Amino acid sequence: MENCPPVVCEASDLVLSFVNAESLDEWLPGAAPSDVAAATELRDSLVVLLREHSGCALDEGAVAAAEGHLRQVATRYPLVAVVGADACGLEPVHGGPFGTFARVLGAVTDLAYRGAWPRTKVCKNDTCHTGFFDKTRNTSGLYCSPACSSQASMRAYRNRRKAA
Image (cartoon, rainbow, N blue to C red; front, side, top):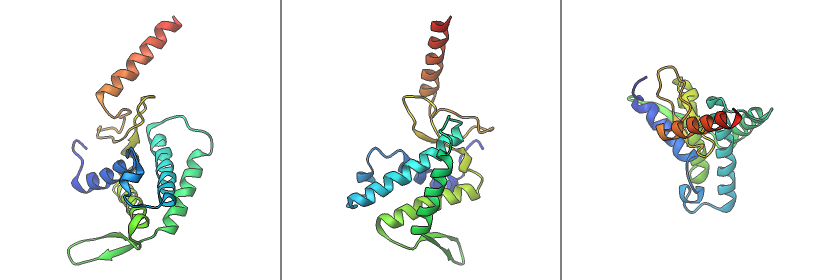
């Protein structure tokens, strides 16, 4: 999978822009504080799963709790199938922030359907944790960029030197 197919890129771009947003206030303009809090919980649950995809060590039960929260969110903010002559897809039932949450979960569903959800990961560099789409052939990518890979390698090298 040298290049990301356009449909997969659209879905992963939406999920990653949500996960990597510096401020969810900016991502959800005009949203109530309770909506921003709900978005933060949604983002945190997604990050747990992305950390799992990256092979990060997680607390026991963290993945199950995140999956449970995402099921609750999916129930609260449903999607409906929209079928047309030229295309079909999933669209949010609600508008506003609720529709945004549903659209993000719809993008996750699309990635899973296309087999690309496990390629959506979080950088393993301790100082980064940026979400990224792993485009390596064997899905072995651990870092969002060569710079993060280099930092992590250098940190490991220094730690080995200290231990010796």
